[in-house]
Image (tube, rainbow, N blue to C red; front, side, top):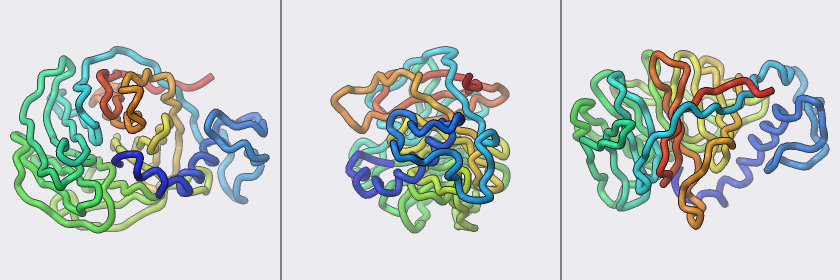
Length: 288
């Protein structure tokens, strides 16, 4: 998702996941939620009838393993680790959007600028193709995975936010409480499915990372990451990433956590944010 100008539009929608996340955090049925959550009298006992108990949603925190440099001018919208270990980065803002490769030491290559009319969003690699979204233009760029050069453009409806790939499909977010399944070759939409936390919709789903049958998703403007069952859309875990230092510009309200990428063959992930100078290598660990 783009800049804070979208927050007013989403404010009502984001209240739903905020309340839902509070249910996970209030395992002891305390009426007081975590910072930023609703202070209403809702408690876990007020979950919809038939919804799973709190214990079914795993609560995780973040352990920082290492810190790597990142480009502080990158308004990060998409992040993914390639099979060889390099990172694909997609950035946003009109006139500043681009796509490039980088190493954890900060060596940039294969950089391509988007036309100023496009606000770049999420990206993912599938076989020999990289797909890159745009926010409001309804255009996805199909790129050569070796050079990142543009091969084609495909139209889609609605907004583009996050994108990831798994076996036989792409998963796309559009800021709502639903995700889209797409054909990885044509980008044609196959279906939309809701994301729910204990029966309640989770809106503001932003940058995505597919890992097997799980989808990890940043929640717009929050430090929460949700782990979603890719088959059912149910949230199986909530990760509190507030321990990750926010070293972005203090005077820019858009410099929030955004960017999650699994490191293949490990239990570690990379996390970063918009205009952040750091890339954090982390593990997700159970909260006490």
